[in-house]
Each structure stands twice: as structure tokens, then as C-alpha cells.
Length: 350
Image 1 (cartoon, rainbow, N blue to C red):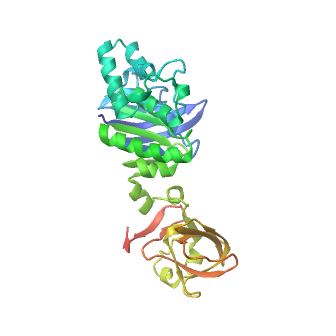
Image 2: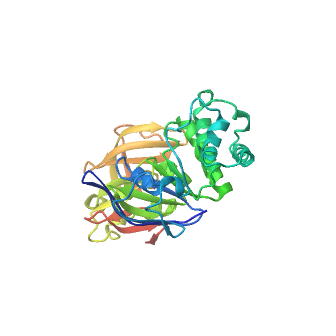
Image 3: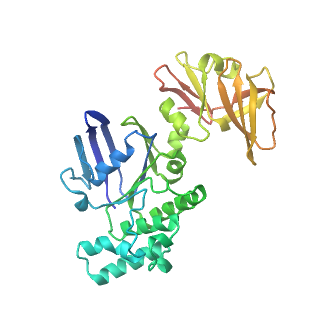
């Protein structure tokens, strides 16, 4: 288990700066997830930590030691890739043992490490199979096992679940979280999937255009997003944004909104139905039954598009008029710079 520090990290490719003065501290045993849209720099940042690329500026420290000049093989990091990167002609055992053999690890020690990792990942019965005989989830476990046997200081994951189907991704997320709890290892994980980030992370780092927008626990980012970008990126379905002028048509918001509020954010699950005329008025455009919930899309009187997650027993129809209001303490106000002006959670201003 190790610490990781990034100080003013910058990276330029062909005169294009893709990372801008990134600062971050990862504590021993933390599971930190980098999340953001494609092209935000999250995979580039992971490659810099691994030593596969060199930063254009700044300093990377592992356990307090500067590692900028230390090669990837000697940094003590183990990387798990999206593509698994297994040798197809080798057995599972040989794939997991290969890195240890290359550095001259004694055969008995290799046997012990591979068997222990295989047991941890439930691969015992698969050690003599080839990768082509495995499912996607099994191949990913082999790739993780190959990392475990190296006893790395830090595990690095680059979108390891993106090639799996939806059901398998859910089960693999649970396996990764359980693995982290058993190993207690420091892990840095890259994904574009904010659901993965929310379910796996101790802390999430939200990146946009090579800059960190916010760092916090999943609940902190969900309850108190720093800006419109984070508010819209974290949470599914995404947050609704309503012009403040329209939001002030609701008497409960009129006096509560700061004078410089430009827009109000409300998550789909945080709307409530009220009698027409008491809150905001919307016209239903579509209504989708999801079982326990119903996703309702519509337009407010000013044309703003909103979506609501309601109880599945409710069944508003297209064309129907509804009165809606944010639940008490469950709305967010943003100023002209798109920074959070006022956020209320459970009735407390924060």
C-alpha cells in the first residue's frame, strides 16, 4: 500500500496541452476513480503515473519519492488494460507467471504467488486453459491476477470493464470492490462511466479538458456539486437545469433563490407532484414505465425540457399537464459562471 502525489502535472502532445497543472494526493489504500468525458485527459494521466509517458511539467511522487525519471518497470505500479493484453498461446498460469519469470523470481515463489492470486480470484480450475477458452469476465480476472502476483505499490486500471456486457459489468464491479477490500491496496481507476465511479470509488476525481473540476466522495459530488458540469455529469438520469426566471414562478423558490442565481438544478428523482398552480407547470411529452419507477419527460411553460423519476404506480400520459416542485432542500442554484451559488441538502444550506 502506497501514497501517490501529483504536483502541477502538465502534458503536451504536438503543441496541444492535454493536462493543465493537475494536483492530487491519493492516500494509502484508497480507491480513487478518474472520471470524465472522452478526451478529458484521464487515460493520459494514468499513463503518466504508470511511467508509460513522461509529463511535460510537474512532479509525480510515490511514497514521497519523485519517480519522473524512473521507468515503468521500476515504479512498482501494475496496470490492467481495457484489452486484457493476455498472450493467447499461453495458459492462464503462464500468463500470470510471465512477469515474475522475466525478473528471475524463483520457481517456488512463482508457484505460491500464482496459486494464491488464482484462489483469490476464483481461477483455480482455469489455470491450464488458454485465454480463448475463457469468458470476458474470466479474462479480465486473469489480467488482474497478473497484476496481483507482482505485489505492486499501486494498481492502475484503464477502463477494464468497457469490453464487457452490461450484466457482467455489474458483477465485475462488485468483484473489484470486494478485491480492494481484501487487499487493502491503493488503486487508481479510469472510466467514462459515472455509475462505475459512484459504485467503486472512495473518492472521485472529475476531469474536464485536462483540468480537475472537483474531487470528493460519491455522496459529496452528488449532494454538493461545485459547478454545472459536475452536477450534470454525476447522476443518472442527469440533472435538470431550469432558468432561474422560470424557477421563481414557484413561490417556494422565489424568496429562497439568491439574486445572482442564473439557473436551478433539480435531479429527476427530486421532483414532487403538486396541484396545478402551486408550483411549476409542465406538459408531459413521453412517459416510460421502468417497473418500480416511471421516467416522465416534458416541457415547462418556458419550453425548458425536464425529466422526472416518479413512483412506477403513477401513469401520466403524453399531453397531460402536471404541477411539479423540487423536494424541500433538494435543489441547487448556479450563477452566471456556472458555479454553485446555493445548494440545499435535506433543508440545510451548504
